[in-house]
Length: 529
Image 1 (cartoon, helix red, strand yellow):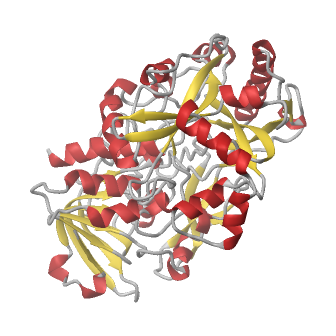
Image 2 (cartoon, one colour; image 1 turned 180 degrees about the vertical axis):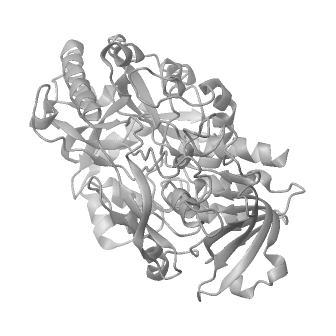
């Protein structure tokens, strides 16, 4: 695969059958899926191989809605590999319920069912360094373990269900999550080229706005170039996809795909936070039950985290959103396992060597747990938290618009008005109460819930976003309620597609990357045909 800087590329080389804008998990997957085909593919990335301040500043925005936890320059990555540069690696698919039109969740429902996406989830696993793409989030998890059986005392399935997240693993570093930026140059295919430090500033269309004619690219010096492609895929992230459509208004007032004023609306994120605490000294049994499991799959060993989620029955009966909960161990500063990782990577220093040598008991216990018990490592703990992640109901007033300020390329900055709602808060409080009661029923010491997380509390919810912006170019069969159709093609534009979480009609409680990559595999098949 050839990697170029636009300043060294002739105008005639800025042409392709398919142009993919953005090299994060969605864009990188499409390029990898199309590698070796008869199609000329051009993968365009705004950043370079490493992050740079002058590129990061293009992520500036105006926030007029709910407070965000992470500065957007940190949470959004203009770099080869996109958001995989900083993600945590937790993966899980959406639930079948998340695809349904639920009467108690306004504006819910995808234009297809979970079964449509399932085959692509299995193919997505290879792109993400996972052992499985489906069949691991519930009871089927135990089927993958030949030497282990489910815990003898089951959860009360009327209220809670077992849930498992899988941790991505990079093929070049078993201690790290998949980094697409490191893997992209390894694709051996002459039909795929990457252009770095090239930022799309405008999408040009025909007078009716029904066909994209060209993309205006700015190189690192700010010089504008023209890219032409038969088909274009925007894979620039949950905010930038909407921003670029809205900003491409020179021919079509109001921006592309925005005939019904839907672009930028229904902005979602996950709300996440600590809802309680467990005693590190008395919670060992609960942490063993709801902890990490190491599973040998056909592609090697993979780590899974056992948690809980609200049952579909109680969501329906009580009008609750989807919500997942898990135990989070917070290691002490002198926990030796981070030092072990550094030493195994060849990053030898005296401090790490001393830290490892001063904890022989923990080292022996860790070897037993990992090699014999096939569970997570025992940590020296600072404290133990109960955490949650809850979905949001889509709302048209939660949205992205364009502000009055522009970036150095002249593109208006996005104005973010992200809304949070009482339904999310009440769901989390109810879920916290259910977990506390379930721990007692199972014989574990229940978590001490934070004051705000208790049922009937009037205190403000201590939940933040999780840097998972979604929904602002949502998928819908009806162009009046969505931006793209079931094939991720922008309504009314014959050759423009969108990839990434911005097409999600709802976001469930699961981390979005596995679904993002599965949709990208599905879109690549469509483009190949």
